[in-house]
Amino acid sequence: MNIHHLELFYYVARHGGISEAVRNIPYGIQQPAVSGQVAQLEEFLGTTLFQRRPFALTPHGEKLYQFIEPFFSQLGDLAAELQGGVAHQVRIGASDIVLRDHLPELLRAARKKLPGLKFTMRDGFQPELEAWLLAREIDLAVTLVEKKSLPGIRSLPLIELPMVLLVPADSALKTAEELWGRDKITEPLICLAATEPMCKHFQAGLRRRKVDWFPAIEASSLEVIEAYVRNGFGVGLTVQLPGAPARPGFRALPLAGFDPVVIGALWRGQPTSAVSVLLAELEARARRLRGEGGPAAPPPK
Image (cartoon, rainbow, N blue to C red):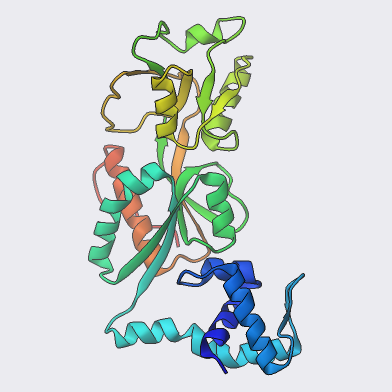
């Protein structure tokens, strides 16, 4: 019996399907390869191990899974023991700005407490990050958060960021209020996807002012927003980052009376030791950005 085929079947059975298994196998392998090799296992055994749609183990599949599960599920712990320590692994999802500007320093600090820390990272925004958490494809997300998270997801608010409008330095606009006084706003609005909390907050603020101004360009990142504003395609919606240097060629127009957006951490259930350490480091970094001293509060249990 091919041991690799058994390993692939273990992941399929554990995660409830081939596509879900591919997302959780800790090495690169394509879905057709998994499907083909598990089919070879079934051919060798002369029996069907699971129904594809909807997924369900057959009695023979359940018997095989119960036999191999203790071995494959404990391999990671055994490897850590043989390596002389406990392996701490965490899968992190965040926006590109967080991954680029904040995670490197935070992970260096976390590794001082957990020398064996290993991590993977995925770039995404709040709706997809929540979906990845629910699907158990990541362990921790750092993103814009809303007051009420999805069921099953816990949150730790970290820092509030005021929203601003970004205009070129030579723009005739001096304040955002000039726009609200017009019969019609002709400048195109450049922002993130409409499902993002920042866009939702902005549109709620516009409704309170009885102003209609909808996105003309949906950008994939704040850097893309800046690029399109810089090239004269419209006015960008972004956030004022604490301590960020002035953007050359831009001016930021404050949005007085608009709710700020909140950057926070999201995770599921009881945090692992690695997630707990990262939550403490995130809180400590947020306190520094807010200009507060003193030790960070312990992360929620």
